[in-house]
Image 1: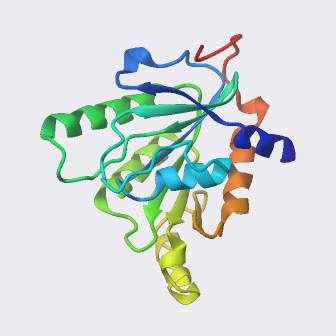
Image 2: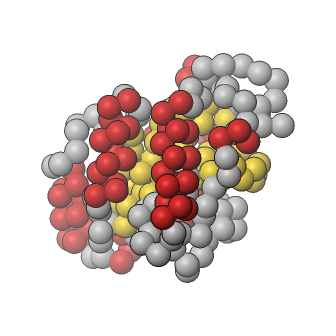
Length: 210
């Protein structure tokens, strides 16, 4: 795990993808991170990679409008998916996001797992449930992260966790997380270490994404 953590800490921005035709070659291992706008995806990525500004954070929900690729090594990438569920974006933009996310998740052979990020105070909104059910129908490994846990006391954290755990299939991971305090970081790192194992790679090329 130590070797993998060193890869995470050296993660670097690779590219922002606005259209499917811009995607890097479909090889190696990718883990995607999805969530509603303002659920804390960028803060999670920055804490995970020990970099304060690797993923751009914003107080304006819905700002991420593309798939953002972060390179760990030539065959492993983290992918930050566009935030969904923000009411003020235009209908055309919503349709673009939906098409981009759905097509990527449906067709990408390199995709080894999906992390769904939800604010612990507002979990399992309709759009979250739709994504979780779709990923389950594809058989995609899934891990749910309840972020901003520092906003609640331990009792309320446990209550929120159990309310989600009861509704989700046993094979799906669920955890609480705080980018501020680091709570849950070890658990999330362990999941990603497993998903990014070299024997998960579905293809080999010299330098994907170059």
